[in-house]
Image (cartoon, rainbow, N blue to C red; front, side):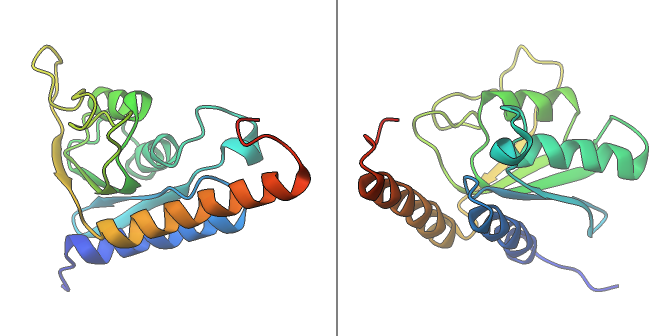
Length: 163
């Protein structure tokens, strides 16, 4: 059996983030791994599905639960290119994800230790182990490139950037 490391799986999540970028979505990608095997993969689909909850993490949690036929993901690690928000971190706690490994921290709304610590909050029935900074520079560069292109297209269309 070949063992893969965190960087390998983050690169798989990164490729999903690139797919999101190409589709005009905020470039966040995620994969769920159990026993060294990817069991689900997703990217943001908020715009495509017109669903504010269609974050990569939410979709990959659903995919992982379907793959193992159980909502309890105690043996599942989730790799995601950006630190999860409160909604996604809460879903990870509720579905008992073992670990979340993310690339880029989000100091404004990250909920795995940066702005909030939902994954490690002692009042919860489950804590999710957190590892940050895997391929951080690549994840940040993709994210920044996406938002530069969004600002440029809004500027060319005459719309205010806040629209």
